[in-house]
Length: 292
Ligand code: SF4
Image 1 (tube, rainbow, N blue to C red):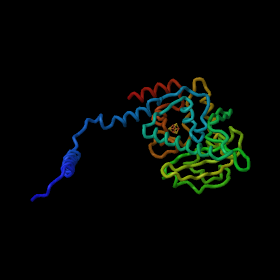
Image 2 (image 1 turned 90 degrees about the horizontal axis):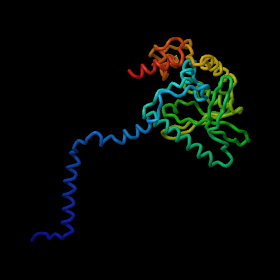
Image 3 (image 1 turned 180 degrees about the vertical axis):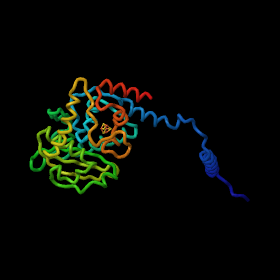
Image 4 (image 1 turned 180 degrees about the horizontal axis):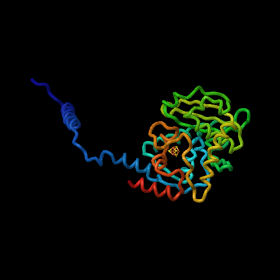
């Protein structure tokens, strides 16, 4: 006599057979139209790059965030409003950086009496430089200091020196080629806000390690920055704005690591322009190059 199967056993067998048929179907997927696969990718990327512009309105000031720039010509390109849109992946990196900055500020807000203000405007007049610092906080000794928050990738975080207590910027081990721009930026904020001490907070984007460097306002570094900006201002203050000449030691025609030129966003345009050029000439050549 065979084994009698109840309704439960039949249901289980039925389910098992259905699952087997489904696995077979899944293991031999039919090609899908491309649109169904990547529509979300496209939608997100387009949202990120939708508002990017190729030119801003010309400005009558330099940006504090760019005071680490060593090339006067690059400063005049920036004041003219020349921009190079970033690809969606880079736009995502920027957004992640803003999120890390916000997370640090949110945490500072939890510490009683610590946070003074955030994103306050500071200005210098000769030449005009404008910026907005990240945070102003109060130390346990009741001193106001300005901080700038930087999110960096792991390979760059690993190259940071040991975090340190209060040092003049020019004495900090951060004063290498890569971190020079951060020191210039913070130093400019300190001069603009008429404060003497600040800090740079670095956070690793991947594992949230953190290092804090305490820094004193530095006249010597400021003099270097002002010198470059005053030369650029001789051209940027003209009406219409003119490009500053290529500084000694820079060569936009070389593809090798030539000071700042290799990584400069303006390079494709800079190398085709004459020694100096007016705003309209720069715009016209850019329109031609971007349309080809
Ligand atoms: S390409 Fe070189 S010379 Fe031209 S603006 Fe950039 S850094 Fe300056």
